[in-house]
Length: 102
Image (cartoon, rainbow, N blue to C red; front, side, top):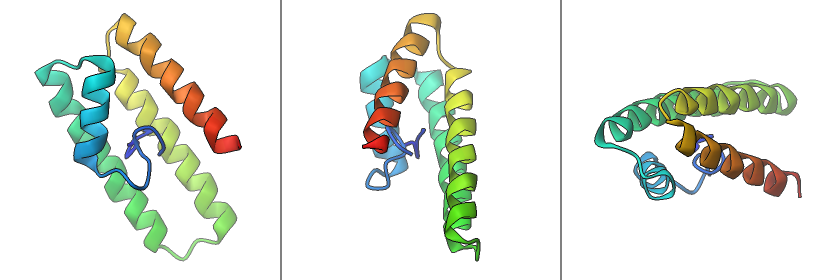
């Protein structure tokens, strides 16, 4: 979530949007307004990811498209965070990227 950038911390395939939002809320202490926006962002990202998976793109193109979607989702999440939350989020995203490369 991821959905999540938000794929992913927060977009890990095993996590649904509610679980991704719960993780973000717990990790970053989101306000009610931020929770609503995160749900919107992650739901939109999940819908786009589902459409990509259902498309007839070859594997390489699918991975490129999904990577772009993750980056876009992360940027949208970043836009709703305060400075302290943003620093924590970037640390989480960096750890996620390191784990994905293993």
